[in-house]
Amino acid sequence: MKKLIITIFGSTGDLTSRKLLPALSRLYEQKQIPEETMIIALGRRDYDTDRYLEQMNQNSASDLNIDILKKLVQYFKIEITELDQYDALVELIQSNKDKDTRELFYLAIGPELFPVVSKHINKSNLVEIGNKNQSIIFEKPFGHDLNSAKEINEMLWNYFDEKQIYRIDHYLGKEMIQNIMMVRFANRIFEEIWHNRSIKNVKIIARETDGVLGRANYYDHAGALKDMVQSHLLQMLSLIAMDVPLSYFSEDVKDEKVKVLKHLSFDKESLISAQYDGYLNEENIPKDSKTETFVFFKAFVNTPRFKGVPFYLMTGKKLDQKESVIIIEFEETNEQRKWDLPLSTNKLYIKIAPLDGVGLVLNSKVPGLRDDVETVELEYCIACNAVGNMSEAYEKLLLDITNHHKTLFTRWDEIEYSWKFVEHVEKHQSKPVIYDNHEMLEKMIKDLTGEDMK
Ligand code: BG6
Figure 1 (cartoon, rainbow, N blue to C red):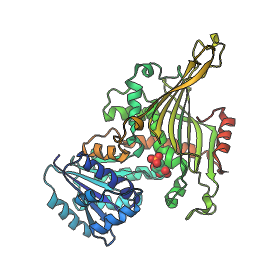
Figure 2: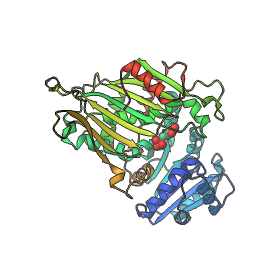
Figure 3: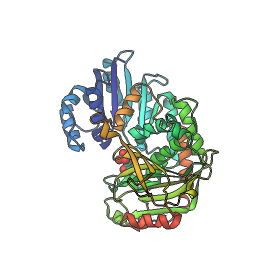
Figure 4: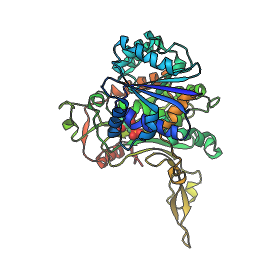
């Protein structure tokens, strides 16, 4: 690939300043994308490129690499809902591309704009259906329920070929999520015991400290179940529970993940919905909102491999810490009864954030003369070992798109079955309880299930 042109629709938003521009400048700095890369930032504001970058720098969480971005970015003023304004954009792209140019069209816009923008992209011949050098990228929310997700998807299929579509779930770009398959399938010690005869339960947890921040309008219609479970938590669950794929190529992996999503059930007695104290005072949240900012429930994967194993899913905002982790707890050893010692179960921690890594909890003899047992953790911390080499999720995802690698992107049927399951859970939700600390929630979970979420 000699040339890359990335056109970002909705380029003045948070996603572009916080994630896309930092990722693209790092990829460029590391020579992962071509020297001849052009980023066309579309927006309706009256900026020139310098002013645009200045504004993006102010909005970004950390300083942008302005020197690099000045080489790459060109701001282009356009009303993306007006078809007649696309001609100038088509001309700009035509004059900068040749027949091998890789072209990405990033829809960093709300889903309500997808239909009109997709139609205009098609009508203006910006993207030719089936052209494999041209890709369309977008991310959640993939609709607000199964029907709206279907509508969006069918609409997109009118204008683009499935091979051109990249649906981003940014969790899949995180280092340890990518590593799940490697840990499971490249290590004999796990390969042999990854089933319901050895695994006692699985916990999938995403705790956050932030509240809704500035996303009230979106979040209040979604809530924790649709915002986090439908996408990130079910993606993690499917990678943990899937059977061995025929190959590690994208479609074979997705086939296995879909089988898991098709076989999900949940225990309605275990469902906890809660809302953080103060949520109703957040800007733009209706005073009578019943949206949950925390959700917990016990699910089951009804496949021969995992039948009967509880999967505890928990996610919430305004909790005590920011942490995403998967905990796999193994059954007691067969020899347990011969030991007159308080043995613990083994646990495998797949640590996704804030520090990616793996931890394995074992029983070990207390060193010295006493015959006693203690639990020890063997820990592998990726960031601690790879200082300077860690890449952000968006770097990996953007690089994979430019290279046509689709494994880390969600296929339509994964989204479809996730929505089916989430809608089923939603039917059993009732008015959320109010929480002002995490202990209260964890106690409720303990009382209901006997489990500590750690
Ligand atoms: C997003 C959700 O998809 O993921 C947010 O919409 C959430 O509500 C975020 O805060 C969490 O992502 P990360 O990478 O910060 O764990």
